[in-house]
Image (cartoon, rainbow, N blue to C red; front, top):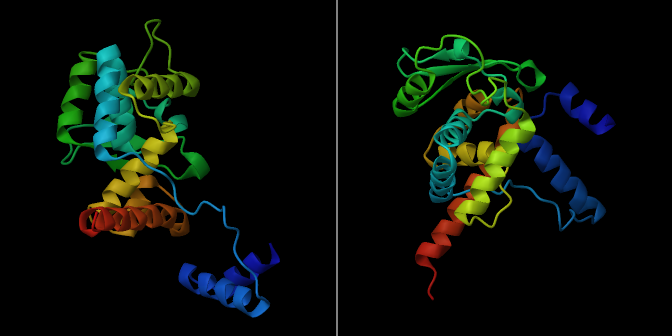
Length: 219
C-alpha cells in the first residue's frame, strides 16, 4: 500500500511502475508468481454468436437480452437497471445511457442500428418501466440474467465458463482487436482508470499472438 502511495505521489505511469517492479525484482532476485492470471479469457466472436443464437431459440426475449448485454458492454448490475427512458435510439449512432454504474462512472454507449431496431420492436408502444421485464412485469435480477447466460452457453456447447462479466471482457477485446484505441475502449467500458482497461489490452495482444502462431506455425 505504501508503494502504491509513492507511485501516485510521483505520478508514475503504468509502464513506469511496471519497469520499477521489474528492476526491483531483478535486483532482489525475486520472481513473479507463476500462476498469476494477467489476462481475462474471452469468447470468440463465433462463440458469442452461437450463445446469442441459442438464447433466441429458448425465447426471443432472452436472445435480445443477451445481445443487448454483449453489445452495450454493460455490467449485469447496470443491465438489470436499464429503463425505457435510458434508450436514445434516434441518435446517430443509437445510444443507451448506463446509470447505476460501479463506482459512479455513468455514461452513454453506442449500439448497432440493427439492435436499436430490435429494441423498438421489443418495446412496441411501451414508453416506461424496465427495458426487460419478466412475465409478471417485474425487473430481472442479476441472478436471473446470469442463469440465462449460463443456460445459453450449455445449450450452445461452449465449454468455457460463461458469465455476464465474460461477455463484457469479450466485447472489450474484440473492439481492441478491431483497432479501437485503448482510451476509447476505456470510455465505452466506463472505467475510471485506464490501467483497468489495459487488462483487456493484454488479452487482445495474447489473442493476436495465438492467431499469428496458428496462421504461420508449421504443422
